Length: 96
Image (cartoon, rainbow, N blue to C red; front, side):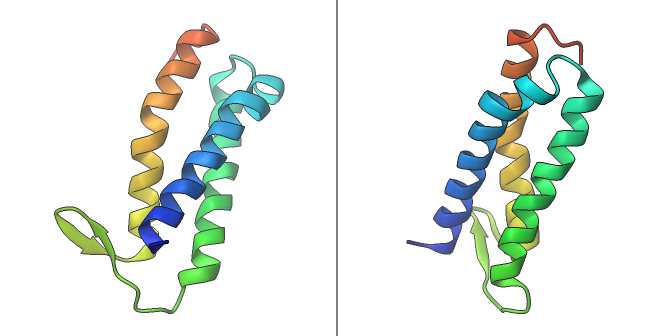
């Protein structure tokens, strides 16, 4: 499995678990609580990926350019979470 695919799958799994199981129980429709939980979850993902790739010269491809593990993970998180936050806020009547 390519490093890019493993990071994308990790982000997908963590985001799905967070937004379907953890956030509804812990944060509900409170934007501040969701944001705080999301900072923790994003930090968890970045720490996990960093633990594996920190100090390596592994390059990650983002179609138009190559980058390091941090920016690849950060951008993938943003791209996957943006629609997820929108759907979560609609389902839970959360004001953005």
